[in-house]
Length: 336
Ligand code: NAP
Ligand code: F7E
Image (cartoon, rainbow, N blue to C red):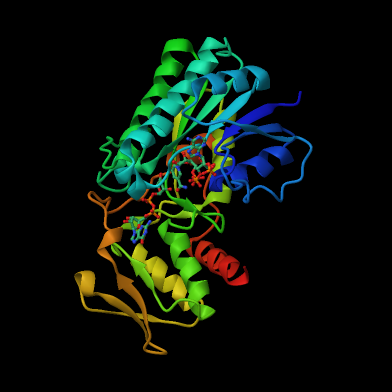
């Protein structure tokens, strides 16, 4: 029987990988599209498929979400929509809570109000940001300590998902995903900011890139691998919560060095604090400077996930190495 999926956040990075993944599996895919004065659908415009349908709506508009879910009657909902930028959440905490925390509640309530508790499975896009500065490696048993308005909103959504599972028997699962990137990554997240800057420097359109904390460490995987994990989480025999991660961690500094090496610059670091610069060994150009405006009021020093539960229960593991991820992103930005 053909399954129907509803993806909120279909126009984002993960949605743009998940939609074709599900279409290839034979799903009918509905997505939530925000109306903007300019189009938001660049990442999925290339998907020309009769089973892909976009519906206008917003995570802050509960009645519309109920109407859509009533009409679509989804077998699976992937709740990917969110104000997903940690630094922006410090400037927009109320909106972030509305979209990320209450938005999740609105979808769960829609499933309950419409009597879809036994039909519709629910995937919540939870995050390694929940762990805060808990010692690495972090797994499903690591205590949470959110350190941003984004993470506190996502903590509410995480627990709402579990509460609706326990209270109403909804197949509702959290994927606690560590950072995952791709050529489709938003341009102000640090990896894509670096790879886009490299392409602009190579073309002579920019001299250097301004960054914040170079010493933060993240467990970076590829979005393509992680959307398969989302699907596997909803195919598991019981609803449960899973960490998806690579199990390896690299600093922002490591990412800078790996990315610039691909265009022939070995970075040498000079100075410290806000005076630190990254200089090309080959040309002596200053390619990296520090701008304190990219520092956060509270930072996460090291994220490194332990994905062994997902490996054992879901037969899932990250396939793309850090080096291959950096290469794919740099090559994409150099070619566009
Ligand atoms: P993204 O690229 O920022 O995409 C976010 C999506 O949410 C976009 O489609 C965006 O629409 C939509 N959206 C935002 N606010 C909305 C609203 N009020 N109503 C309706 N749609 C709204 O994020 P991503 O990297 O794909 O991440 C997907 C999800 O996983 C997010 O929930 C994120 O918090 C979570 N997550 C991401 C990572 C990661 O490393 N990527 C790790 C853990 C968890 P527009 O296109 O119109 O802006
Ligand atoms: O920052 C540091 C920054 O913004 C990574 C989201 O998908 O993953 C993402 O959140 C690190 C931080 O991602 C700049 O301080 C240095 O330590 O790329 P990011 P994030 O905050 O880790 C989690 C798992 C999510 O759930 C989120 O939705 O890089 N950093 N210099 C910088 N970060 C940015 N953005 N810009 C800089 O110039």
